[in-house]
Length: 413
Image 1 (cartoon, rainbow, N blue to C red):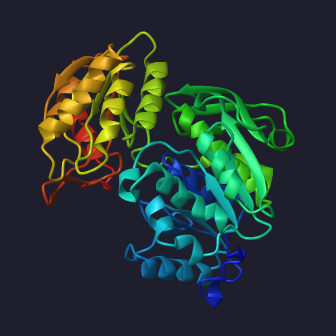
Image 2 (cartoon, rainbow, N blue to C red; image 1 turned 180 degrees about the vertical axis):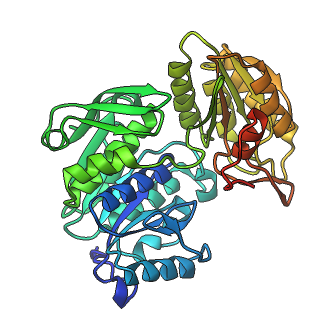
């Protein structure tokens, strides 16, 4: 079979742009944001595309969310001097041939878990869609792979031989499947951020043996390693990696701490894996105190993930408040029943049900005592709630701030 590469530049003005592509189930937006911060710390202008926005040097660009909008934003950024692009790329976009329409020089894989694969028809097609980014990575480029995720081994097999592999990993992901180029030997999480001590390696030595991010949680240590490995593979200075990660502002709704007495957190976690990791982070912060989790599950999506989501929360939280997420056209009572079945299997959490999401959040905050950690999970940065065919204004971030008597930052609906 002939090599489908190199992928031509999407336009003449894009010929000299170097692009990082980031894909996976969880952590794409955070990894993309961290990478963009590193490029800026290296003194370079950078175009960034995430599920939140298209931006130049962290400032959103007013274009539509479409292929034409992406091209317009990228061209505007290139005209302003950006020669680096960092692009979060979903499985749906990859399935539509995105990796053949825009040239990717470095490809980053975060992880793979059973989410969104319903839209692809099967787990195999879901993985195959993610793999398209790596199949089409430019000759001489690099693939940044999670050494503790089994799906990375399959992606490795389809990545062309002339693409360099860089492996990274964090112990909490699972067994070591490949020798690491960059590994966190230990991770310390506090309400103020996450510190990584790196296992000895040439890349770790270049980075001074340690990294720090303002993001809270071990999963963000994994994202930081992915971003650091990609940046070093691209030849960016180690000092820029350290500074970029340390100074990178957190992505709204990614374990975002909005209150401290009790600790009140909004998080985008909406898969079993992400909820398990979010709960583990909350547990580490809470110590002897309680973890209270408000969560639901989206309607008209993969129902098979709901019981595992419930089990993840039920085995780690002290109180689980089941509420609506985006029920869409599905009966919220059926979604809640699926979640309750998993919560019961988890066996630890006291189960409370409150269908109204605002009342559920208020209930959790009222239950909480100083030292407890309240996590409002599932919607993160979203500014609407879809019920039936209608999307109504609703922001977890704004609601938590309002209930805590805090001023809004102006970004929420």
